Image (cartoon, rainbow, N blue to C red):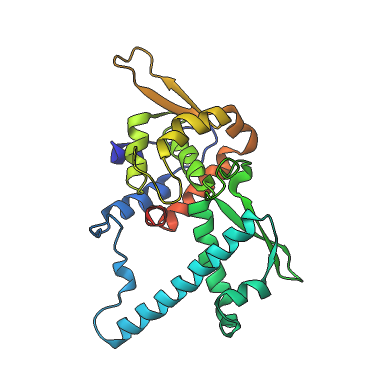
Amino acid sequence: HFKNWQRRPRSEAGVPQDTELRRHFKNWQRRPRSEAGVPQDTELRSGPGEAGDEEHLVEGSFHMKSAALVMFLLLKYRTKQPTSKAEMLEVFSPAYQDDFPAILSQASTCLRQVFGLDVIEVDPSEHSYVLNPILGLTWDGMLSDQWGLPKTGLLGLVLGLILLQDGCVPEEEMWEALGFMGVYDGQEHIVYGEPRDLLTNVWVQEGYLERRQVAGSDPACFEFLWGPRASEETSKLQVMNYMLQAGCNNLGSSLVL
């Protein structure tokens, strides 16, 4: 179902063609997977020998520093405080100042794809930054969950998957697509919690999704559409651009965590 769904041609309603996006997701599906279901990044392993090992260690060091920066920025977002380059350098040592742009870029990609937060430089002269939810969305899932994490990334993904299906996705196919990205019906996710509650309850009540029964279905089957709040806060073009960027950056492996 998922492969056929990916191959569907786009409508002419102003939504960009998703040929490139389908290609990225198809390539991601075909990548070899570990026992945990995470695609194995064989392209990072340059081959046997010391050069390959050294490259892998450098890559791992960057990942660790980026992960530490992600946690720091999430704390800043929770407390609604801006931050600065100087503060961020203290997270992983000022000795890595030359690597700061690359580390910040990697951390920003994770924050955007997984948590649905954009890192925005508000004052280039002072190198100060703030975090805002992606796509103009105003819900982050943290108001009712004191210790929770932002869940806007999954919301943006679901809205994008609906667009790829010409504005309406059968519930069964939605779970199949999310499963390729490590988000499963009835299984607690480390970031998003219980995804079924988000899709069928929270986001419906918040007005981001509409969940309606398929006409004539017996037993009852349901499908997802955009809700009125989604149309008010964001646009199809913004969401499709988000999906294209996510496909280019291996969104699935990021969501599996």
